[in-house]
Length: 621
Image 1 (spheres, rainbow, N blue to C red):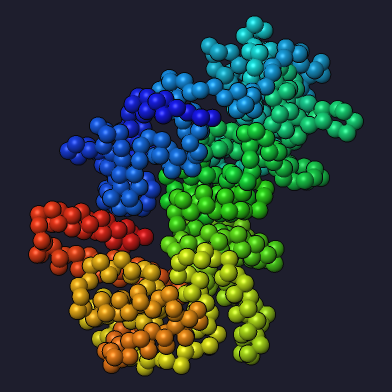
Image 2 (image 1 turned 180 degrees about the horizontal axis):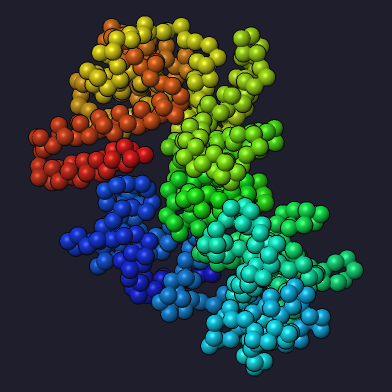
């Protein structure tokens, strides 16, 4: 759909950005702007500002900015057309007609009478009437009367075309009502520890065992029900309902619209035990996560990918709103990117059995190409015979949180995975592990430092040590961040991890000529493209290039005890980011003492404010 710029501008003029953002963020008027805590990153002091006169927002912490369209796209992970349709509806400004899209969402209603056989699950008492001027969940006063969703409406009120979203909303209400009258389904949810409020919040329901209960409840909507796969046709040409005698889990898209259903059989003889409605024009399993909408609604900050719907719901009931699950499919790059956009730190839970390990390995290979610098992946291996639901119920919420917090980073998990069954005391075992590692690190993004850092971490753990090993000094007076400048730690990091220069490159703009750190940065800038790929050789190459200051470098390496500080590649990368930001701030403050002009003073002040926000964000994380 092509939308003219004039239409876009007209819609943006009608939108009150303060009101729109204020529905998601608590805003407070501060002078000419409205401010609040940024919804796109974690912070304690507000750095997010909305400019009502310009219809524009900007965060001085994470640099997120834009108009109403960009806010909704980033906030809800929605595409441009989807957001424009929503804003069009809110503002009353029509978009150009797209007959193709409309056709996908619509179906032809019919006035076909319902099947003559009565609904056989508690008969009419399991149904509900729908009258526009009355409670849509009102029960029929005469339970012996046969009922369907449409036959409560006058025939002339039945539209010629129906909308799939509206239809699935009505089906959801129908399944919710059925749950109220089926003790077996109610018992299942109670047995799983769910409260009535939880059942209501997640809109859980029950599908009757009748093979044609949907045709009887929605006789005018059979075409639509077939279009979303809830009514199927057998090889013998007979229609039947996909979901029968199952508890129902409505699946919502990022806008909160029901787009499909998951069903769990109550009778263990029914196979398969779990089933989802198939992909349709409005339901795409590979692009959705169960619980994502609910997590966004509850402003979740930390996200945990689990296996099943009940795990997501149990986590939510316990107060953990960031649980999500795939829709009966394996996780893919689309799923992971959806979560990485909300928080660069993601945890995935797996069973501790062999099947869980295989799933973890598959997910690992999918995730590696996405791990650009700044993203962090943890693997939460659950105790045997436990899922998040059972673990919380038996061990308590605090124990679960502690296990989640201590879940290993990717680097530690990967080392344990690749060394399993290998004798790493022998050269052959070490060689095999490094070969497997190389296959995996080749999947990492080519840009960034993580590939190099991960390889170095493995070499050290396997005892493929460096010949250049400074003598460690364990004197407490020389411990981390005591009596030692950040500048010395930065130099030590750069010498011991030359490929981390990318994190310090922009620091060259701040450090004056003649400074020892500037000499190291300039040297690295000259030799960086020529560094050997092997990390040990790269260190020796850099030491040779800085031979004239060998004494000073050796002293710094000893006093910082840098090699003991680098426990993992993630730790090294985080240290580099921390020192780079801190030093940029220090040198900017020095430069501000003697600005060349008023304009430069103002420019430096803006840079310093932005750096201060970044450092605050780093501390919060």
